[in-house]
Image: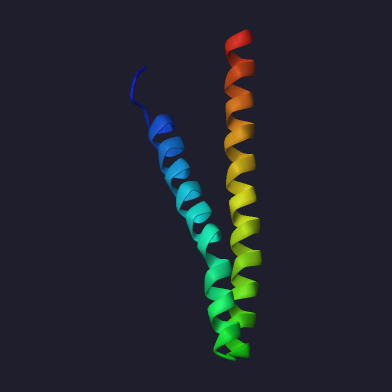
Length: 77
């Protein structure tokens, strides 16, 4: 496979997606810690951050799926 800008772009998006998934796998622990400490503001902020990051993660994942689908369709023609 030839190394192109498109390949590098998908690789970088894949790395971003991985980092977001790792963050999402840990954020509930942070929320729980804020709750245990009675820090309502931190808990709320983390819950909002979780929702935003989940949406961003879903968008990145959908982008990669759409790009892969387009490339598959291009190879069929």
